[in-house]
Length: 111
Image 1 (cartoon, rainbow, N blue to C red):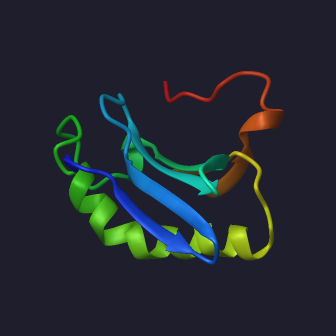
Image 2: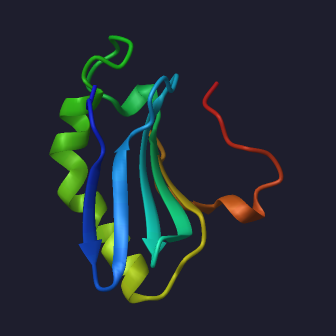
C-alpha cells in the first residue's frame, strides 16, 4: 500500500492523491482544492475481476504506480474543462465509465 499521499499542483489547483486506506476494493482518489477550499473529488475504482492480482490488495500500490500518469492526465483534462463534478472512473470487465457521484441514487459498490 502507498504509505503516504502525494500532493501536486496543476494550474492554480492543489491535488492530493492516494489509495483509499482500508478499502475493500481498489479505490484511488484525487482531491482537488483551490485556495484551501475543496472543489471536488475524482476517484478511480477498479473491480477485482480486472486486477492482475487477487491477494487482498497487496498489489494495489503497483497498479497505482503503473496507472498514475494516465489518471493524472484524466484529472488534468477535467480541470482544463472546468469539470468539477465529483466523479468516479469505474473500471471493470465491461470497460470504463465516468459516473457522477452527485447524481447517483445509491453509492456504487462492488458485489
